[in-house]
Image 1 (cartoon, rainbow, N blue to C red):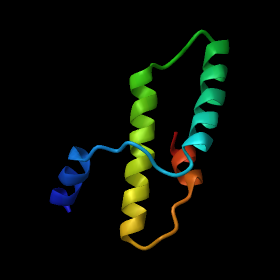
Image 2 (cartoon, rainbow, N blue to C red):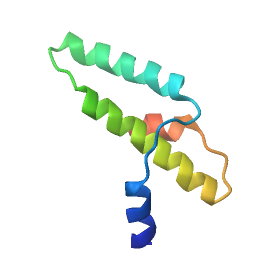
Image 3 (tube, helix red, strand yellow):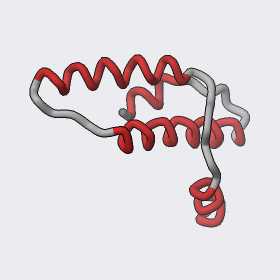
Amino acid sequence: MAGSFVQLAREEITEFNNQDEINKSLLKFFNELKKTGAEFGYRTASEIYRFAGILKKLTEKDGDQWSTEPAISEI
């Protein structure tokens, strides 16, 4: 399992389904943070996209249907 994790960490995740949905959720979250004077940077958003892409790859390997909802709820 560790080898598979390292392999996934090295792969470039560039795009996946439902990017627009995740982007909308991130924008809502960013706007709420902005009200309190807090924010997160592009690197954080990039890591969230990467997380969603890896989640998709992992669920595809198990033959499951990937859904954006689990990724968004983990944000």
